[in-house]
Length: 388
Ligand code: HEM
Image (cartoon, rainbow, N blue to C red; front, side, top):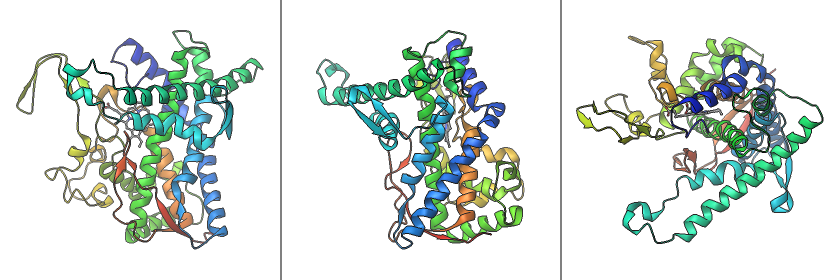
């Protein structure tokens, strides 16, 4: 896959493919309709839930995941599906289960510890439960991916081409792939995982902070009103919404979806911050540590979007002072998509509703899994703003 391959010709080719077909500036324009549909569906489902039961808190994650996964599937495979029949399971599985098998279960595996890592001389002892969990998750992931791909293979065989990553890979890849190749399965799975997970993590944390900080929520709403009046926020409005942009970057600082960057290999002896680092060392950059460093940020534990608004000595590059998307040649391929989806979703969610946390939920900020998913799903009270 792009993310875990060493830097080299294969990785460069794979990253180019994903940028050209899906995540780069021009490709993003092709999926704008799908992104708009996704946000509109989230809003209409939230309205339905609030109308049906205005007083109970609702689970934001449940509503958002379904539509976000729909967007990932549309971009990756050309079709959103509400369920799929998985031969190995002998049954049809729902979208919720697809998300769990393809995203959540694997990311939980990524943080499982194998005690043998700490005692390498005992590596010969089998760790059956660890291996069983891992191989089961992998087998289930493969089964669901094969089922999703099979459906699209049939579509392609019927002559129905779609604008999506899978069709692009089949037509353009410099190393020819077929729909049945395991390499194809991995590329497509990486795309679904990448676009569904981190965007969920960052949207949920943003809405948590917004619901927790009513004054800042009103500042954001005021900015949206001034720029857009009664009309719906679109991606074109983003450059004229500096507070929204600050909310996005501040949330990525305080709740970085990827708290530790994937490892770097030091390829020659070097000196880093006064330390001699020999060639062959693996380095992992602790983003959480960088973003909470008191020497770099005033009161780093506070959610304060204002710090990204400028003032004296402000430079545009400061907005990228967080390393939330990584840096250098391996910088995140999906940062534009993340910004488009999260910013427009947040703006429209605030445009439509006044947000408040469920009683007693302020301060529930623990995380789980490989990316910093909120441990307790966000539960909120929503009051429609009655926009004209
Ligand atoms: C807020 C959302 C996101 C955050 C915070 C994020 C963060 C990151 C980080 C920290 C890295 C590692 C960068 C490094 O090692 O320097 C990365 C890599 C990557 N991300 Fe994202 N990401 C996000 C959204 C997305 C989306 C929507 C996609 C779309 C599929 C995506 C696809 C990738 C890919 C393919 C790589 C590997 C790039 C490479 O190895 O060259 N990301 N991301």
